[in-house]
Amino acid sequence: MAYEADISIRSELIGRAELIEKINRGDYLVIAADESLLADLPSGNWIAGTIPYFMTTEGGKADRTSMFVHTIEGVQPSKAPRIALYDVNSISRIAQEAPEHGFTIVILPAMSEIHLSYAQHSPEYPNMYFSPIIGWISGVHLDELGKNSAKVGFGPARGMLFDQQAVAMHIPLPVNQLANINIVNLFTQGTGPEIKFKNTGFSASDCTINGEPANLVDYIKHAKIDTRLPLVANYSGVMVNVSIQQLDEYNNKVDLYAPVFADISYRFAKPVDNYLESFNKELSASASEGISFSCNCILNYLYSELEGKKTRDLTGPITFGEVAYQLLNQTLVYLSLTGGSR
Image (cartoon, rainbow, N blue to C red; front, top):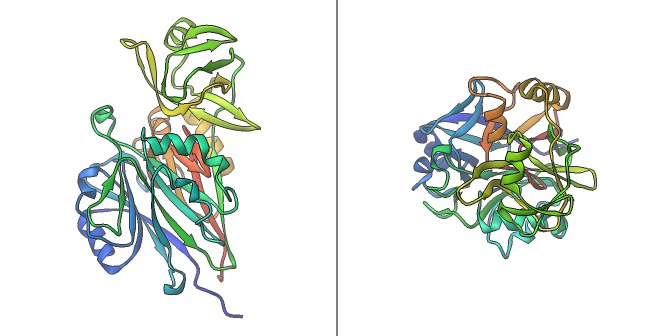
């Protein structure tokens, strides 16, 4: 019986010169790097997102001189991946345009209108959950928060970086291979009061606490909330985290890494006894064979003190948010490719 060539994904941290060689060779690439390295790359079969934090084979690191690259290998000309650029009006088509048998990698820029739209509406997109969609939210160096905007790169157009669009690579698989998405999330809703917000957005101020008018900054300070713990909404058993970026006490608001939504019920997460130990235990229990693509939240990097520490054999960008069909936050997500001709 004849088999199609298997698709595999090779992950590596490389320099700009080596990346340009791969682009000029026609490789299909998903790139994570500091914006300075992405500017004016040759046109080619690639998508990219700005971020200078990575999980590498040597451990977590911040690196503004290297680029983390996923190379899609085994591509057949008759079934080549398709690269797409989406705006806030067209992103709802992403699942409809996914391969009938395959998977999609998507990158969206943090704090953009399309980031907000995807977070709010992706579970309702046509054909969502029929084909695996995984990806990440691009960001900036933490020293540049509020100064520079996150961007994505669209390889078919030379040097084009966008801060209000998303990029995706739709990757077909041979019939004997399967793609599966897994999520590592340490958090569940705690037993604290129910919190609801009047407005949708990446910052929060006025809210209700168990139905009573309140301000989120005041509540966090009064209740001595550990801001390493996210707000958690329970969507029919799926825990969706909204992580705190900072308390803006001057403006009496909380800046967030993901949006909160009006009239959704949130609670602060149950405390985690030992963040690093719990994370490693959950990762050990969840990780499986055939992991081909992964990304990890910047807050896991910070709070688990992952600099210089390995997350098993998982490598990839450390991001401002994760996509496993819908938008997630303060999680690790990974894609496994199973089956194949070997």
